Amino acid sequence: MNFSYYIAKRYLFSPGSNNAINIITSIAAAGVVIGAMALFLVLTGFAGLKDFSLQFSTYFDPDLKVFPSSGKTFVFDKEKKEKLNQFEDVAHFSEIVEDHVFLEFRDKQKTAFIKGVDVNYNNVIKTDSIVVYGNWLTDNDFQVVAGNGISRELGMGVEQTYTNLLSIYVPKPGKGIPNDITKAFRSQKVVNIGIYSVNEELDEKYIFATTGLARTLLDLPKDEVTHLELKLSPEANEDIVLQQLYLIFGDEVVIKNRFQLNDKLYKMLNTENLVSYLVITLIAIIALFNVAGAIIMMIIDKKSNVKTLYNVGASLPNIRKIFLFQGSLMTVLGTILGLVLGLILIILQQQFGLLMITPSLPYPTRITAMSFIIVFVTITMIGFVASLLASSRINQKLIR
Image 1 (tube, rainbow, N blue to C red):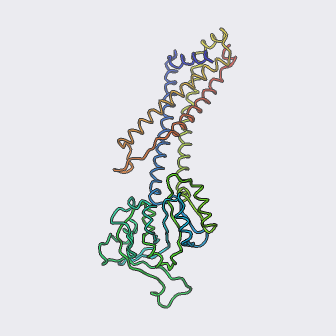
Image 2 (image 1 turned 30 degrees about the vertical axis):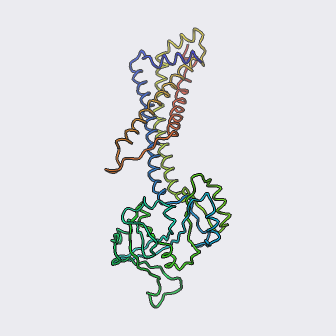
């Protein structure tokens, strides 16, 4: 083992007798470096893109969300509220009343969702992080906060007085077409005191209001909610919290965590990451098989040396190990150099924004230990297989 390793190092770091073989070896080594660097850049880039895409969900989505298992609402009475208040793992919770509404501002109309929240909502969600203009809700039942998309579509700004009012309509339950269309809706005029922005989809979906206004429009009793949003304490165990919540609410609810609330987004990002990894790995496989070609050319170049080693007592497996070690060493060193160059590029990107998505937004990146491990294992395994295939070309016929 030591004999083969020693000779492999000598072959790797000493130039061959043929200049063409030296060029081929250099190209193979460069392929390893570039392949490792490219794979590292892709993994860190997608890690950053995933964080960037999911950061908005941390602003808007709670740690846990409690839905009714059937229907639109479930009962959240005083007894259940007291039990939830006594549960130390739940730091804060907010009652939510949500449904479709029809909006009218001046001569423009739009359908949207009203999301009625209570005073605890500020403790569950970082409302300061989503309000971009104006103020968040107070305890006034005649105020709303509209999404940026809704505001643009209706041509509605932040109103300081009650002169320009937003009309909210909710259809009353019933069958048939009423004779008087004005009696078919419950309505309320409100003032928009703020504009929030999370992402394009949510900005066009919600207007926030108090639970009092939402319950009045939807004609819901005070002990009914459409869902609850919970913020857990830092030391809370989510599995234990779920068990306790189901003991309180039974099978009348379904509970989802932040991952489950954004499962489609997570699946999309993970799929894109996997596909990109496979594509870059395929390119790396093609590049790394230059290592096999370089080893074969080196075997041909060192044919006389191989015969000499065999004649002085070196076994055929040990001679094969020489070139296996040579290719493996080339791959390991090339991978380490590629990782170092990739790390330097990522640090420069984070510091100076070499690649920009917009004039003010650099492409997001995140360096993780897993990225180093995946790149090192992937590239070295491919290089080892390529070296093994090349070294297996040494046989009795070649030596004789």
